[in-house]
Length: 465
Image (cartoon, rainbow, N blue to C red; front, side, top):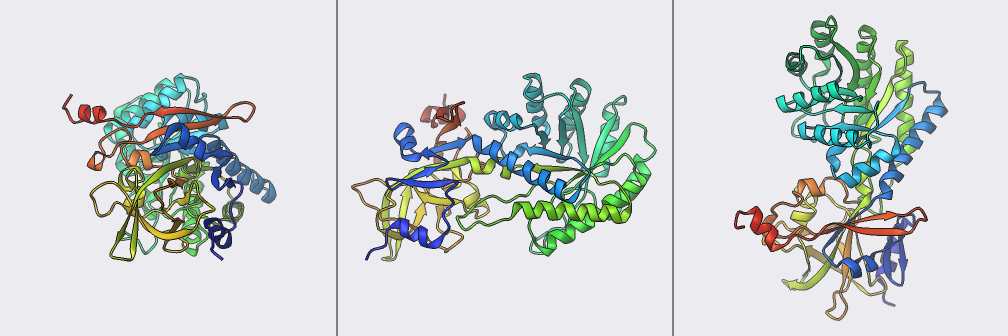
């Protein structure tokens, strides 16, 4: 008996039916009929299902609320969105419907914050946590924000010079600041200590020498972030313990310190085999913070997080059509898509990132093992492995019935890294981009955010028009 594609998936995974379903051998994503989407808008196609943003924010807030109640944690929790994950207006508009705060990374971010504030989408009193290396332009914009809007702006100091530059840039401004700790990365990294932040042993001397006696500066936040994210590993718990020791030591000499920012790093589904106990991790992190503060007889800090990929990643997707199949060297079958991985899903090329990849149609057909190739002439423009099996299996290619494939949970970073609306390798166009919402009755509504790039667009960018 022949095994159909659905049987392959069903036998390999616990299919996440809160996210995916099948109807007439076609894939349904969060209740969205993807074949209907293809028939209406064509391929290649990118989309964002905006309700998933609010869903994930509320999930995280629920985990922290439940854990704090269960262990008697007395501090508050502040969910802030890491804007560099996706700066698009449709993302920020959805994010700010959920009583959250903003984290920025560079000078132009501040212009977005001002726009959101003046359009009454970012309410007075919200926190704006300003991370990143502070260029003169970034400092100027931060000071403008402090002086002209009713927001709680906290520039997080990345190096000793930054606060001095800020004090000199405006001799009348007062600053509530944070200090970023330069965490130690996992040994597999080429550079063992993060290039961002101030070393552990320098923070207390820095505070005592420069900040303690300065009436214009209050240290309100200690910030850390681990590049590998929040994971249940001995490395993560060891780094958290070291950070908590610094917090407790600093709190004893700096009474105004009250916020601990544990950064971002919640993982998202990159495979159907994904399994992560978010609630356990939140409870364990808060338990360790509470225990350390109790041992040091200091109040528990208010907690900030800066979830970016977790906020927006699972709302995004990309759909391509298989144009042609090439048989190479009698063993390798290449399915050629109508776009490029390098240009439109750049993380697949740059950091070998894998996303959930599934066919959109023909789930009842026989399957075969294939490689996926993009349209550029670059040898690196391919996608050839999945996390679970080191192989890709798709319904068999046929000229009689088209095959469409989808990449899911691609909503973070891909557009900005790929240079949205700009030049692409081999002049591969930016796909059409569709937004998906639900109305007050729960009915799916779609709209075009941007059309597919044209030759005219490229000629203008290149100076021919």
